[in-house]
Image (cartoon, rainbow, N blue to C red; front, side, top):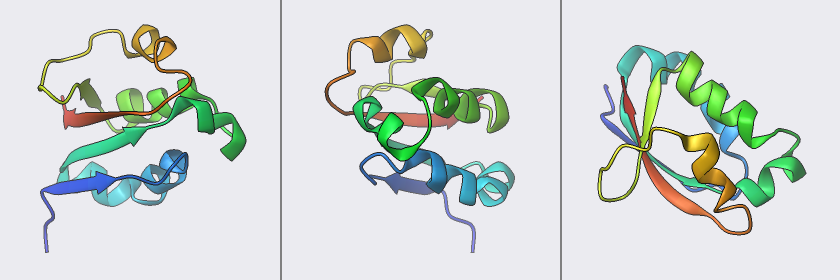
Length: 93
């Protein structure tokens, strides 16, 4: 089956979830709704920048807020959410 939408809410384990699903995501290009929790990334052994790179450079997804407005500079944007989480839509370029 082809899945068109994935919801990820794993409290800091985002990198491992995306990495483990990389081949499926890359092949099928579903829209992803992800809870992004920068304050937990270091605890799980990776940086926010590494997660952003996986999403933007390897999976070729763009970040959108919950109003579906594209976020052009996600690195800068995440500096404002360092002590909380925020939900984003990830849509393939």
